[in-house]
Image 1 (cartoon, rainbow, N blue to C red):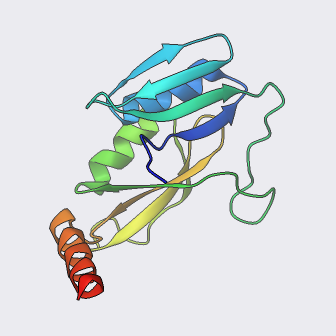
Image 2 (cartoon, helix red, strand yellow):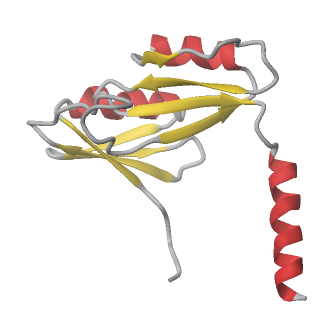
Length: 141
């Protein structure tokens, strides 16, 4: 299957709050219809869709209503990312034991209640690229 793009879709009762939140997190833009918003990131890629769900019930992370979607966002500066997410309307669900640790994550909820993580200290792009290249090289051998 050749994919043109991958778009994560969130249900939300308040389309504007949900799409504006994710557009700001991704430093992008929102294109709106009556029952659907498309979130385009700073690079011009369509990353998130927000679908009108008037009776949306936020998941109760981590043990209640089944989780509907989960995003991991990886950053270099967890304090700055935390401040920005909170200022944009995120709610902290699970704080990290130590924001100064070399590696960690915090769990948040977006305005519609969907959980997402902001993590840091995880493998760099270079480490992941080397890992993938190594695995592909082994596979071809």
